Amino acid sequence: MIVCEMLGRRYGDFWALKGVSFEVGRGIVLGVLGPNGAGKTTLVKILTTELMPSEGRAVVAGFDVVSEAERVRRVIAAVPQESRPIDFLTPYEFVLSYLLLRGYSLREAKRRTLEVLKEFGLWEVRSREVDALSGGMKRRVLIASILAADADVVFLDEPTTGLDVYSRRLVWNAVSELKKRGVTVLLTTHYVEEVAALSDVILVLNRGRVVDFAPPERLVEKVPGKYVVEVYGADGVKVQGVSSLEIGDRRLYYVNEAPKVAEISRDGSKVVVRQKSLEDYVLLTIGRLGEEYEDN
Ligand SMILES: Nc1ncnc2c1ncn2[C@@H]1O[C@H](COP(=O)(O)OP(=O)(O)OP(=O)(O)O)[C@@H](O)[C@H]1O
Image (cartoon, rainbow, N blue to C red; front, top):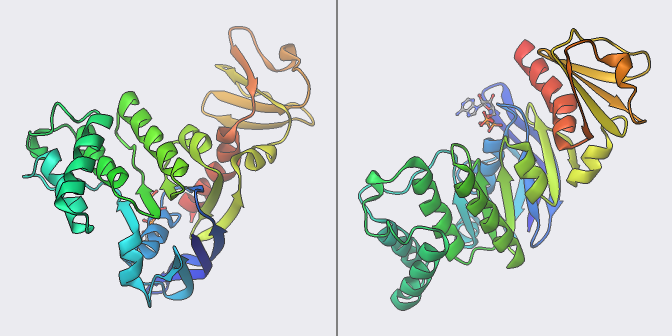
């Protein structure tokens, strides 16, 4: 459903994306992770035909994003980063006009609009001007429109930024619903637990290059050790032969055995022992990549 072959995009001498190749099939949720400036939005813009690649090729739902851009647009739906619905419309009018523009009959568009407004907690505000809605509600209106349309591939660029817990869960449900319908979803987000919970496979980008492309559990396997011991409020004590990472006043130890807490904690420090997670992969891989990025 999405195929990229040596995709690249250049701004002057600077490559925002370079040599990006991957492939995902139908009904797959692809999470895209990477530090600020990694090229996530550039990738989304190319795949949604908003931006031309400088080299390589990309195919979405069987259509080339350059030579068949018009056909790509008919089978995708996208919520771009920081996008908002048109202010002077009501949620009802916005979703309805979106569906009419996509070619649904008035009767079918109305039916779908009413259904999705109820499903997405927008029923009460359906006749209010979008302008008067909160930021989170505005975002919900956009996602509801996408859900109401039958797209083959959906692009969500940081869809939950700034949303409250309830609205975020609604977006998560929407992604699961799309997946159930066999829709391929590309999701970019900085929320690690979100990408871990929703994605079948994760594309990790840094400085426009692919760092990893694997299911979340495979990325977690790359974290050393079996458990993580987090020690707060103590000066970091390095332990011979144990991988560790210091973040502010916290040191994370990646250990194989139920840890010998006494070895690493000091009086008054708080110790938390937990399973390793995708967050650890991000801290160890992307966190460092991000620092490198800042340094240069
Ligand atoms: N129009 C442009 N002209 C020049 N450089 C650009 C342009 N658009 C993006 N870039 C650069 O391309 C790189 C990738 O940007 P992009 O927005 O794709 O990153 P991102 O991973 O989406 O970042 P974030 O997480 O901050 O949204 C950045 O270094 C950015 O400054």
